[in-house]
Image (cartoon, rainbow, N blue to C red):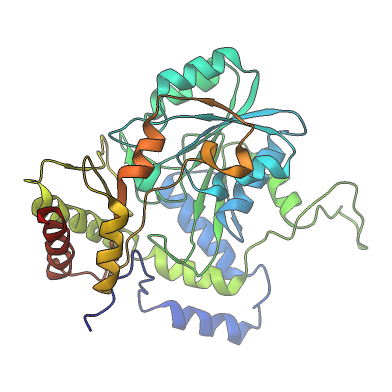
Length: 365
């Protein structure tokens, strides 16, 4: 049996165990500790952000952003429809209303004409945009629209750590930015997230809410709902080690994409996801104009190769069936035609050729 090629498996740097040992020696294995501070500092430095808050996952970071932004029952939150459930489930946590926006076919990201149309028609409190598979949205226009219509911008950069738009880091454009360090991300701590806040007051409020909203007394006093969202010092130690190799991981992801591009460039029915700026290329994604990607997924699996469809748009999910949607038909087409290929940073060029040879055989049948 050929070796298993996973979609995006963890890749340790070598220092993770060393830092975990330091945590255990200090006995600060519970939330908070030196490595939480160090992890937050590294993310701040890398993104040129003033405030960063380590939390348990990316979804909790988005939830905190909505809470701090004052989103509550009945408020409207605009969002990319082409995204992962964790990006938008917090809208429901707040009993708010989601309004979804369709995508561009080349980058898969939010369609700006539809977004502006929605902003004109909806009285919106916030916008959650997602950089799909690490490819940056058109941030100048999005920031401009949010200012024009007085909408809080929450930048879901869960998949985009290491991506840049005109030299500026993903996650640093919005009033809030979030990263994920889940097991399949470009860097992983097993599970963690990071919330960036432009405003110091917002950061303090998010910190307060993430630690059970405990009032500043010796005893436990609570006047509003808080959450147990703070990051573990053990996982933060892994994060510190992972941040040390971020540039290497981005370079390798981009190299893997270039290998796929070279192998598949002459196949007319295949279109790789377009990047207008500097993507970390977290996953190599593409669409087939004629072939059925589910059939290709099945054949790849028989060869011990993991692949997956593109995200199923949120407006097509049962959970959001009653939500308003500004449509152009693209996100549903992307789901029916799209495929994510193995993009792990331990892959070799021969691994990529192995995947591509199977795809070519499928298309020749």
